[in-house]
Image 1: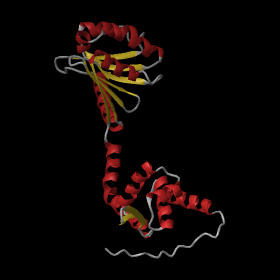
Image 2: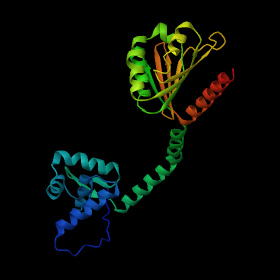
Image 3: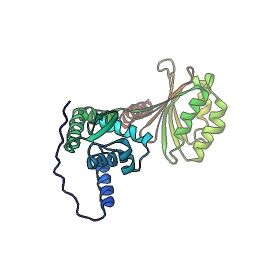
Image 4: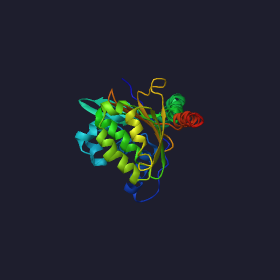
Length: 269
């Protein structure tokens, strides 16, 4: 097998502090992003030494031989270091430095290929609502607690009778409503017209609430929906013991428009 010696036209820094120059050049290679710190110093060492042994590279770089084998293997995978043999000895040599430029160009081309997909993900993030899912009674309580993060605001709610049968009513009146009032969070609610909620309605002023009742047979409400915080929707399915928090300005605005339409229609009635 015949090997060719490549002559590199490298401009040597005339600085007397050769070690300092070597270190600076190694750091510059690292900053480019193709090579890690140990890879850059190893590559430069082999480039300077020519065909050389692992012992000489270790002495030049101050990197332990056990570590150096992995570093050199990484450089070989990147096409920057080659291996030949002299008798039983392994000799390593540096490939043309212009290979680094080729690697950079290849990475750039690969990135440009996937850039449209990356941009499409960004677009989806802008449009896709953020959804949090909760299970069990404690999970539904988390949804209620989230509505309390916006003091001195207004919550719009469609209420469901299922809360009476499948949820912790004591938590609602003694904990949630109490904290909502303390935080001065007003509520407008549309609720089924039944005896229990008629009684709840009598506490509207005390609870900072205004309630309008609808015919539950004509308009059954099987889940509770809370609109709060300008872009949050809390959904509580009490029978299934599932809670959802959706963060979406567009969904919030659409549901708010529907609520306001319901509210005005009930005023006219």
